[in-house]
Length: 396
Image (cartoon, rainbow, N blue to C red; front, side):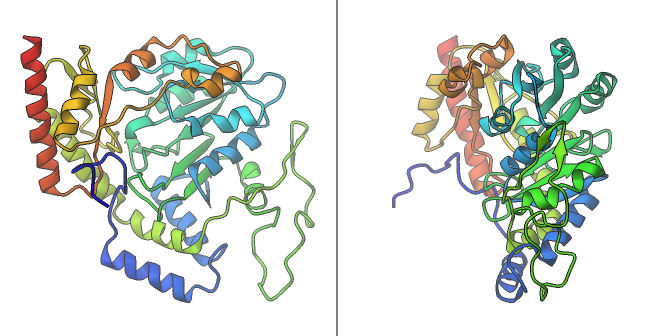
């Protein structure tokens, strides 16, 4: 098949080293079991060592982690959850499915994520939780958000799908809240062969429920496999939170993915640093163009999972057309969720979120995979300069 784009937007985020590939083959051939085994436990322990305090559970995806979080939160009687309207739909759907009433939140235009001031203005007597999405790879204003939430008795959920390895004042994203969800999808800075996730739970009482909720009601395999498996939930009462019974799922992840995840953790800080250095270099190279705006953050608070620019004048359509001429595919992200037909049908079609609307209508996301070669990266910058100069000439 002929490659349509010289630099496509989608695709794999990074390559795997020879050592990582050899390790995957070894686990494939020699692991005693390909699920629920020693590599699962090792990955969870390694992840805790990397992120910090809490209880960690490897699952099939970040969406699975969010499903479990929504299930444990036990939303009842119009309990509200504050969520950013500017995020991917997988962040929000689990909470609607489990009974929460959605309150759309705007973004801070300077950071493109929710901040403490926006959160505080939306709190009501029915607010049970807030979902903070560290979108584009930037760690949100977690210390201030958590301080407000603790005073109000509000649960804090972190969607860290795009921000693995980032930190705020020395604390990793994902360690601040009551719950956190991490993603290892094919596009992420760390990918366990296309899919995978981690759920972090702060409270041990909740953590004790996760193994059976994750794997068909079975308890942790703390006994010999030669014994018969215990029937689902035979050794405990069905867990219940605020009158709602918690029934099991199957969100298990394979041993090969867990083994690879542990190995990749050894170089995720390096991957993030290399992407951030590239992002800052590109942003500075284009700083003379006054009609575009980047979010420039040179610290480890940003991992630049994605690299997006905002047009301050209505030139986005021209930009896309010109970039295609150079074989470069850009994208528009993330559709304000109140504009989705699905959310309109569910009664969530209105949102007072002007910053999110404005940013979405004027943004462009660049291809920015870690696996991009130096030659491709320079080609991207040079092509951007040529296109932006053409646009600048039209402006004048």
